Length: 270
Image (tube, rainbow, N blue to C red):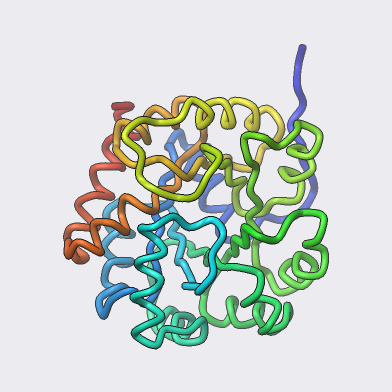
């Protein structure tokens, strides 16, 4: 049986163009995650991971009551909030620099709603941010945000969980922009000693459904795990393992070195 990809005539944005071009050239995709404002040198860490081989970078906008973040990212968010970090301060910082790879923010819908859909989307564009991940905003309730984001030129990345039925997964894939975020396991973000079997299963299920790049995140912690995921997926998102190193004082240099290890792992397949 031949399974057709879901396609449309839309013009991809900067995030999706970058990831598609890298994938079509034969590369596996690497998307690290850093919490904005978690330390004085957080932007230096962003530059370091870009230089180390990231294809795109997720910037976490800290929120006091997350539903997806595990203890590591929650700790980084608490530090960021204690330093007075706000969505506006993160975007203002990003607006003053050129990272060299597309950026996507990851935040929660309360912040988007309070700012207003159009205002938030416009602020992302003004700051040079290409995409947005809002994990607590389900597809069925995302129409207002998605329409404003599309109009402003912001690519909304949607998530597909291991428990998502195929019919709904196809609809999510069709609506996702930038990439499709495959959730590697049921639960919150965090480092894992072993890769969950569901990580490869989700990737194998999603890739026949869409031509949009499929990246798997949550529970991918080491170069070997990243390489294992990429045997099925187009790429990986790595957050907690990187944020943990920053919390432990690795600094931008350590962050760059870890991302270089991830890059080598997925490039060599081990």
